[in-house]
Every structure is written in C-alpha cells, then in structure tokens.
Length: 253
Image (tube, rainbow, N blue to C red):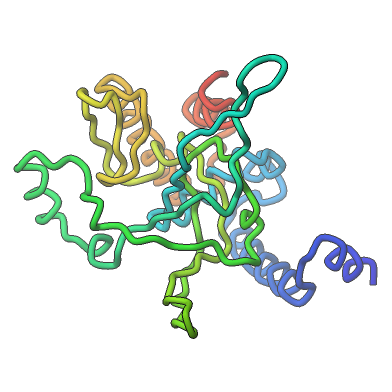
C-alpha cells in the first residue's frame, strides 16, 4: 500500500515500477552469477546521479535528440535588463532521420572527403517529448541534448499533422557523449567537436579529441578485462577514478 501511495504522489505507474523492479532483480541475478559484485564496488556509484546519467546516455546512444532553444529575450528590471526564462513549449527537439541514422561508413567517409564534417540540416526531423515524460515541462538544460529509449509515430488527427513522440527521455551528459558516443571530429573554424557528425559541442579542439580518444582506448581495455574476468577489481584503477571524477564534476574536478 505504501508503494502504491508513493507512486500516486509522484505520478508513477505502480505496475510499471513493479515490472521494472522485477526485471532489475533478474538482471542483477544474472550479473551476480557471472561474478560481478553488484552489492559491492561494482555498484559504488549507484547513488551519484551524474554517473547514472552518463551510464544511461552511453547505453542508449545513438538515440539522441538535439534541443534547440529560441532566441534569448530580455525584460527590464530595476537592476537592468535580465534574461527571460524560456518556456518549455518553445523548445524544439530534433533527431536524425532513419535514413541518416542508417548511413553506411562508406557514405560517411565520402561526405568527409568532400569537406562535410557535419550532417546536413535535412538529415534531421523534428520530434516531440511525450506528455508523460519527466522532461515535458523542462525549460532549461545544461547539455543541449537528451537521450530517449523509444520513439513512436503519431498519426495525423483532424487539423493536427503527424508527429514523432519520444518516450523515457533524460538529459544527456557532455562527457558521456565524448567518452561513450560515436566518432569524434574537430572543426577548428568553429572551435567545436562533433560526435557522429551531428552532435556539436563547442570549445573543442584537436587536443581535446586526442585526449578523449586516448581515454576511450583505456576504457575499452578495462571493459574487456572486466568482461573476461568479472572478479577483477577496478576500484584502484586510475582510469576508472579519472573518468568518474571527470563525469561527476563536469570536468571541473
């Protein structure tokens, strides 16, 4: 009864939460049988939201949507002009079209050879957050990208056109995109880094990309080592601790 009451209070579906708990128990049991210390050091970051957010972002990549904000507006005050808070309904979300998502490596290399380090605007299509999403009323993001678990096509009804709805969305993490996303590229003219040629992060350069790629290789090596022998302890790994600090502090640690 207490669990049902909590779900009602926070707008959650009790049946879905019970199903999620059951699936989690099954997955945890499978990992434990393989030797992972799910109640020990392998779960020591379970309460750190930024670490969890990065894990979710890496797990669902490349299911990413770009968040476009409207032009800034200002209002007068006694202290001078201050920026007006953007309304959630004015934010626009864009995802790659199915054709762009399924583009082959050869096509990507061909684009790069003719000097197109970024995907063209026509390769994206507008999407909308499902009203049940916890981000539906969100108006401010520290990272201009969100990750989603699924998308549904909503048919046209009356004067309302067809649209794509995104479900189970969560704000992405800049360092998760850099470390666990797709291929990195730089554009010195824009002072930016792109992930898979369409996720654009400002302030990047060849040094940043080189460091991220080196760290990626170290992470891959550790993951392979852990999969080969789940009982191997990574608690004292400098790479693991560095990645954790980088993500939890947003690069300021």
